[in-house]
Image (cartoon, rainbow, N blue to C red):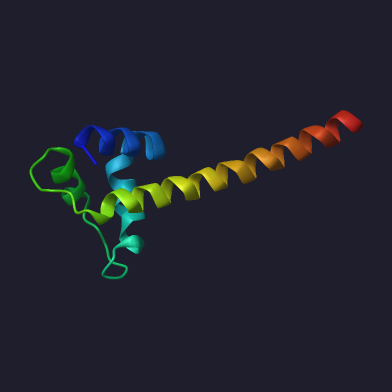
Length: 88
């Protein structure tokens, strides 16, 4: 994963505070077991000051799939509300 891809994924998934939110989301997915990821570490990856571990790309993909599933549940709920409103 390139720095540009990391930045794009982080901003897309989490918005303006993406570094902090990504660090928090990556913690439970660490291959060595759940742990706290310091946002400073993510800043170092973003700034090219520290190499990004290989596991991060897969973890970000997992986070993206989870967020997609959350959004799909929201979309389905809204579609159900809309359908009920159309009937009434």
